[in-house]
Image (cartoon, rainbow, N blue to C red; front, side, top):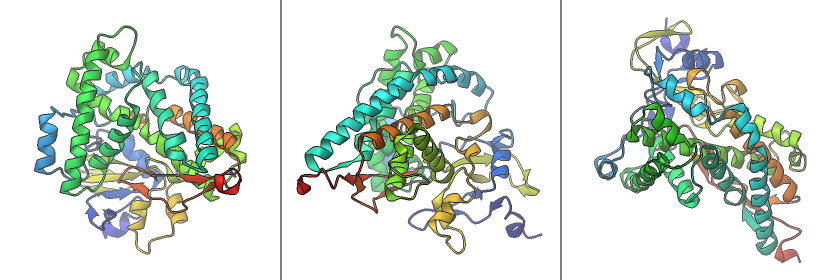
Length: 400
């Protein structure tokens, strides 16, 4: 049998393409049942490559990281050893259903404050960017507070997060790698100080709990590096896409409808299923194994489609239109992964997005998109509009 044809129900043997047309050496698995199968077989499909840089880092960038003592031993998302379950249990203790539910009033308070500031800026200047004004900072504050960590350096944290996403999941050239590596090194130094401070701080916090579990400072920094990015930046991106699609008129409900709890929840779930901020994730085969009746060689790099990934869909023959690309393979049950590495912050992210979208829609009636074609973050495993620029045609200075 021809592997190229027998794989079609489960995967495509054609590798994904980067925005510059270069080929990414991944076997792309799209069928939801096959994706679930991979995620539930960690002994066959390891997460060891989940956090490996998509574009191999060159010498100058590596030297910058080395001078900062940058090190990312596998601890949580990329951990395929027996230590994973114990570490995950410690981290999961900060994301229990009761803990997340108890955060709802605080999330709403932060959302209302952000929406009010956006409304003030609109009244003053006639325009604002909802990504920066509404979506960016509440998830960062919530994550730090939830983990028992000090809320500080938020502008830096947001910059570091985006830079690290591009460094590890993007296609930067050598010069851009060097810029991003400097940012990542700065973040890592900041994180190392935070860990050292936290393990001796009074009260309960993530790093103190991890130290009690026996993790080294380097392991705690490795875990914290990606958790402090994924735990808030992906939520910001989910909110950004939801706001943009609502204002563009491409959502199943309208802007006014999103000002209700039901409407906001509905549209967030729609975006999660069709255009999630984390559309793909990676695995690598440990040994030759079977997937959907096909043999997968050992060492095969696999890209799992979780929800509406446009980069790999665009690599298909015929280049299907965006709507079809966004829906293909979509499954709300896989948006946050599945199995022993499923995202611990799934319920928190959905709650934050729904509350922030609801409060923004309630506080900013009548706004319209200023830029219908913004620049997008398009990385291998992350996607969102970089800006959601809006105007208030009634309240703007030009209309007074």
